[in-house]
Length: 137
Image 1 (cartoon, rainbow, N blue to C red):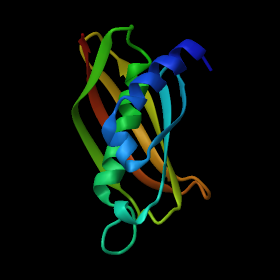
Image 2 (cartoon, rainbow, N blue to C red):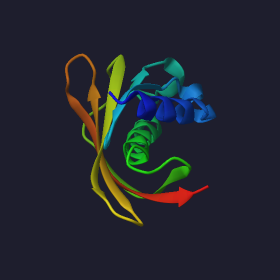
Image 3 (spheres, rainbow, N blue to C red):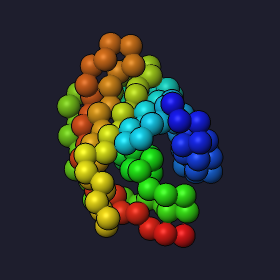
């Protein structure tokens, strides 16, 4: 793992209040890839006791965003332009992982994908395709 890249992503990640609020953790980053984890808590679930779709969407979007963040220079931020999510099964897992990957890094847009899985079983819960835009500070 590239320590400079990890430090840059880690600092950015930890500056986000929302990610602290939901308890998301950055697990790993490398060029074109980011893995985010989240432990299930009652306040993140919906009426059936599974993780809320909004939480799954936020986690997948974050993984896509940080995957894109790894392919832009210092001083450039990443913003979501659009995403499509497929919720494949209820997220009843105690811990989930969202792995974001860069599909194509263009000059103006970066296309990414993310899979959200049950950390223990590896079962696929959610998939996302997202477009990100790099914005200079």
